[in-house]
Image 1 (cartoon, one colour):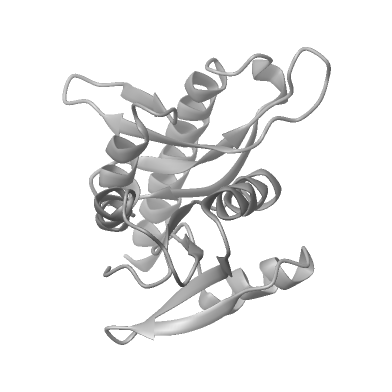
Image 2 (spheres, rainbow, N blue to C red):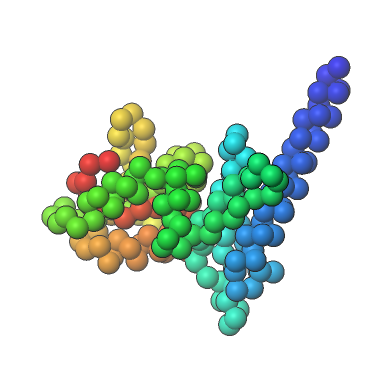
Length: 190
């Protein structure tokens, strides 16, 4: 009986892997050069949503920064694919994590930031284990700090004196690590 359970588990995992590979082919079609697609932080949730980050090379052969994506399983079969741009990022964060933080950042966007701007790593599977995230940042020589909010660790970069510097660091973290983050005032409520 135990052998049957092991075989069933292996087959279930193999099915998920094939499903992820199919989604990756669909996501890659959104890139300039689909054959160069590289994926990071890929994760599945119990509802069948596949989230992660993807990047590929442009026509000149240079890798572009990572972009977040979500693949939502449809009841009729197949997946709806969302690849991040300015109109889809909140929808992707609703599905994959970080939507509440994005809404807080949007609500405070026009307010002054006398204490500077933070780049906050989006919580959840995107971040992985706290020690892994901080190790990856250290490896890439990106200074960070860990604070606790409501008993949960939060990884911050900054504060930076102006929003432009924070956004540049956010773009650098996404490009080099494929890690989703949000720019928000240092003292903004979250």
